[in-house]
Image 1 (cartoon, rainbow, N blue to C red):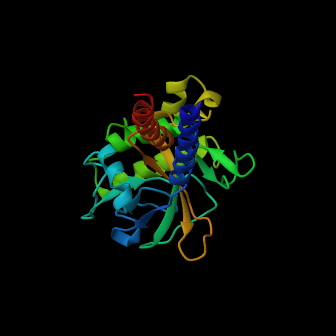
Image 2: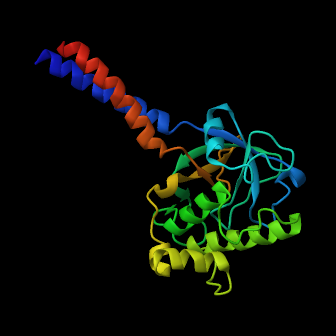
Length: 240
């Protein structure tokens, strides 16, 4: 009984560590040409985000077409989730990872939380890999900005921030992929390993425009897996 009690205490302690780690803030910095990157257009993406040391592993999920663009280093290209928030050029923000936009923008939020849609996750995952069909990765800066505008609009539509546009090729691609608009707008629940970087002002803590990121695996699963692997070893020592 004593061994079981000790083991359960360790389980509870490890879970506290997991939840504490999942709440840790990272930092990202807007950078590149114009302070947002050479492909940023109007009030949407592509945004060029430079990561801190703790976020460096996410760069492995981006191709040469979507990382270190415009003579930048340790950067990836991203798009925003909310229409009514903003970020500033050449500015560092605190960032926490979750499956939803905080505050939720104009539409789609429940109790201030707006989960990433499955359509958004699918589109952004393909973008990060450099395999998104009809995206002009290799065109001129102006041509790539045009693709960025269309993809950003599609993401905003999928997140209930913009009205439907039948001419948008990425909206149509998402609908074709998932069968209908409602299914494309369903919660992603971490699918495609796409998550939200919930940005806040370093000085004030005020909410800023949340960005998309691809992680190796959903962070909560990775942390839980690490904790339980450690607990297996501890339990073996107690039962040996």
